[in-house]
Length: 245
Image (cartoon, rainbow, N blue to C red; front, side, top):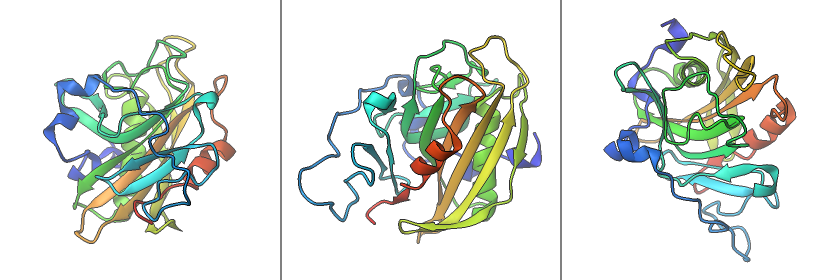
C-alpha cells in the first residue's frame, strides 16, 4: 500500500467494539425529524444550516453536518451504525459512524464487495465521521482519510484503484480549525456500469483538546448519472461544524 494509504490508529472509528462488530450490518431507520424543532436554532447545532435539510451529528467525533432532504434521495443513517470496508482477513480497513447516504440502492454492484453495514449498498455518495487516534499530524490524517476511503470504497486490495491525494489545506469554519484534503480516484475494476469510472473524496480533520484527531469524510461516485456535482458537494461540506458550535 502506498504512502497515502498508510493505515494508522487515526484512520479507524475507535470507540465501542460494536462499531466494528457483526451488528454493524443491522441499521435502524433514522428517526425522521428528530433533529428538528420549531424553536430558534439551539447552541447545540440541532438546526440544519440549510432550510429543509437533514442534520446529522456525531457526538463521538464532534462533527455536525447537514445533507439535503429525503426528497433529494438522501438518507440519514442511525448515528451509531458503523460503515466499514474490510481486508482479506475480515479486519476493518476504514470505519465510519454518524453517516448519511445519497441515492442508496440505485445499483447492486460495488467495486469492493468487502463492505460492512451500509457501505456498498449501491449509493452514489456516503458521508460520515471517523478517527479518534493521536498518531501523526492533522495534515497527514486529513490526507490518509481521503486516500484510505477512496482506496477501500473503490476497489481495495483486490482491485487497487489509482489514488491521487492533494496536499492538506487549512480549513476554518463552524468552530473547526483543521485541515481538508481531496483524493481523486480512478477505478480500475468496472465489472458493470454500476461501478463508476472515477470518484472524489474530501476529508475534514480536526483535533480535540485531548489530542485525539477526528475526521469527516465524503466519498462520491463521479462520471455516472445523478452523480453529485462539485457545487453540491461543496454545499454539503460548507455545513460541517464542530458539535455544539
